[in-house]
Image (cartoon, rainbow, N blue to C red):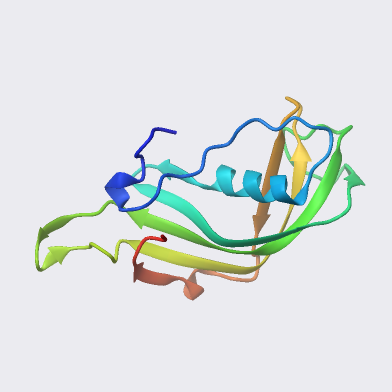
Length: 148
């Protein structure tokens, strides 16, 4: 991730991931991996995670129903659950008083009941993914300032 990549959006830079290849997962590492894999600049938007609360469950063996394409079938899978807010922010513009989005260029998507997993890939690194399957886009708050 380039330094100052959040600048055009009036935000902080997305957190970057460092490879994590240990054999087991910790709660702190799960939170860090979840956040860094979900923060990015894509197209004309930056996506950021705030207010993250994450719990790590006990490990279990991979099942045939686990559908991660890059899952190491011999590694353990850790369930995770928690809550967070995902921000999608467009680029800031300030043409004149009636054509500006400064302080209103983001949409906040609350995810109060997210669930997912952390799993090891066939490359030996870890992925942590969770989604709130109940909350939909109608709970989003548009035209909000970027997260601090």
